[in-house]
Image (cartoon, rainbow, N blue to C red; front, top):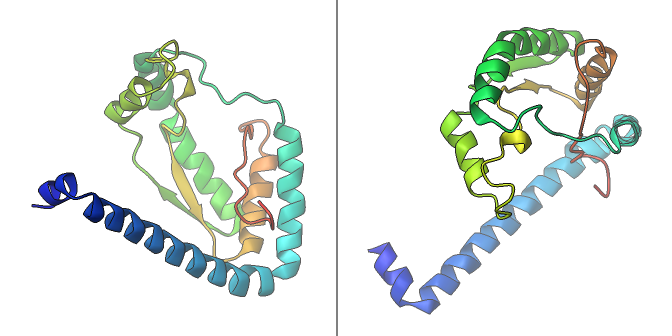
Length: 176
């Protein structure tokens, strides 16, 4: 029913797009309000420390290339992800404990999803090249405060023999 209505009515499609945009705006406003209350105001000094740390990492990672050592998807999984998954889980469990956070393991990215990511690359020359696939082995560290996040990131920075930071996505610093 919905497919027919959306295909036959430009007005219905426009209304749906407007609704999705409105929901996105509501979510963004709620997120911004919570961030302002809990982080910017509630942890203002810590936010300044975070911003300084994030800027340091951005400077340290400038020019580093985020790329897998092979373009072959099978090799990436068999000789890479499957081999390091256990070490990854233990390493990030330790980092979380050092920083006061909690490590949450996640399932490995499926080979189908990785294949999908290589297949839908717009540049035909890069299609089927797995060297840009990220986060095959993954997990998250949950923190209750910005101070805990800083401790966990510092623990990562101190583990240079085991881990190299190649990129940071700073979604907390003002203006970022």
